Image 1 (cartoon, helix red, strand yellow):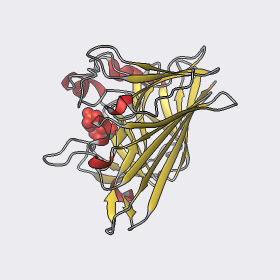
Image 2 (image 1 turned 90 degrees about the vertical axis):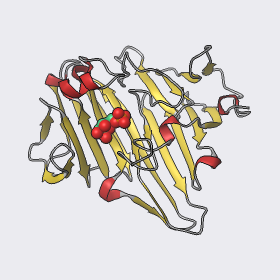
Image 3 (image 1 turned 120 degrees about the vertical axis):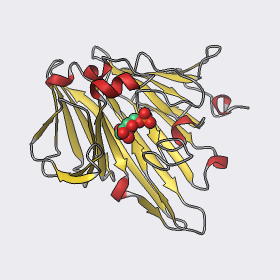
Length: 289
Ligand code: TA6
């Protein structure tokens, strides 16, 4: 029985499994405030949209939805490493693995929670991920180390946000925060401006970030708020023109309508899980005018 047919799929009426031939199986969630979609591959949230609002997340029109290939957009789960690793998939294997659905719960107040677990044969660690859909999107990622050795891992919610125009977008909350500039020899620099604006390719790993970051989308007159717990890193990425053209699953012009602000614990903030240890991180994504 594949993970997407796990017995836990006694789904509440707000959750529908969609399995079209030749396509990756996914769950669609309807709440009084919003809709969402989550693929079993990677426990990958690909859509979240409040009723009457523009989608919160960006999903490339050229994403390929091929088993074993990361979906371009939404919220890829980066684990157990961030970045490239010789002979292994970039950003770890979690985002291309088929996760098990532990349960789908419709709460009395209308919220819906989907809980996923990484199949045990893929990692000696016990990894769980809960997605709660309401007027906002809550994500909780946790790792438990049942082994007798300490384990070092990186974990990151690689969130792609849908914006009206990158030229009229800024990120606040990063002023004075040091960052690793992945486009300049991984030099350590410091953010000097209260508002980060983007006019070229950007690929920065901010370290020791505050718990609240905001994306100001001037075109849509909306702010996207990221509220995190136990996430000391934030990665800001936009491929801009040249890299967009090199990416096979990303439109040449799509850099204009997306921005990655990824939250987690990577680079200098790698998690050290002692034997029997447990670590977790949370993110609440919301938007407001
Ligand atoms: O977001 C940071 C980053 O590491 C960038 O360097 C870029 O490679 C991006 O992730 C996307 O990576 P992917 O493996 O999904 O193409």
